[in-house]
Image (cartoon, rainbow, N blue to C red; front, side, top):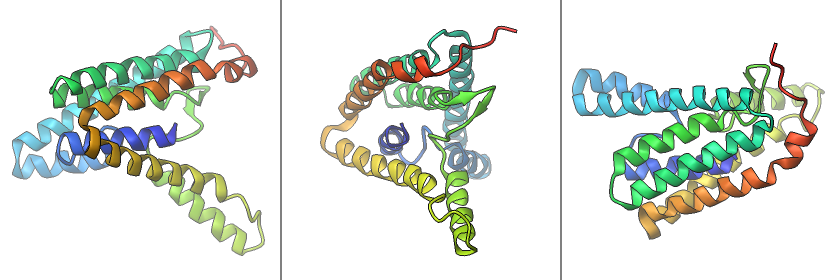
Length: 203
């Protein structure tokens, strides 16, 4: 899922010229600079931030209300990516990017528990910091492998971004169909996660 986020973010970044569909810290900086220098930039960045935020809300609501939360959230992500691929292939770059931002916001609810995100999928600064902290701990005699899961997530996102950039270069917006297919596959494969998870509380 982290690789999928990197893949989609790279395609969106190229598609709309230097804005992000999953990295909202970068868009927040673009919004702030745009307020001072270029109106079109802050409007575009602001739209992507709003879409991502709405995606987080939609993904969280979907996960909390569904009986099979992983499949429900990943189904939503797959649907939004499919719509993003369709609009992108039609040449509507910004509407496609907004749908991708919605999808990436929703994806963060995949591993949500008790209202908190347990695994960061679309943002890696905190994960990268944790990897560094665990390496520092290992140097002081603590668990020598605790940093590996955090670094693996970061590497997955970077690897996905490399793949996305390569695919976008060769296939343009049509490369998004691959992302939609991967999300759909993850949705279908999520059954064991839902079987192992406790039923959501309605209290």
